[in-house]
Amino acid sequence: MLPTYHNMQLVLIDKHSTEFKYNDVIVFSNDELNATMIKRIIAMPGDTIQIVDDIVYVNNIPSPLLPKDQPLSYSGIASSPLYLSEDEYFVLGDNLTESKDSRYSEIGCVKQNTILGKLLK
Image (cartoon, rainbow, N blue to C red; front, side, top):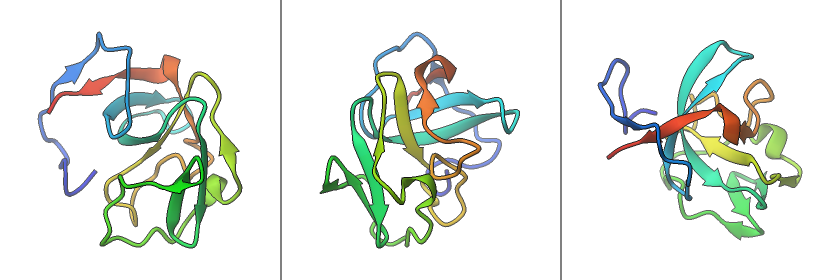
């Protein structure tokens, strides 16, 4: 999540929050990687997401949440339209060129029941 958050940085997590919105930074567990991860919500349940020519489209509209100065050269599982079910979120890291996020099949769409909380700003 560089440059927003750094390794070993102390953060506060709201573990009681169950309502999330676009641009929230969430903490979730990923069994496939045996890791706890921190990423930003780009798409919400019920949305359709697709990444085409370095542009992230949420419901066929370019997302305003991405940094303009970073290329998004890898679209991964979002190269075709991806519909999010009622309990799924699509997340990206702030360092788009290095981030392992929802674009990668081993992470994929984040299920609501794996979310541990929301980072407090």
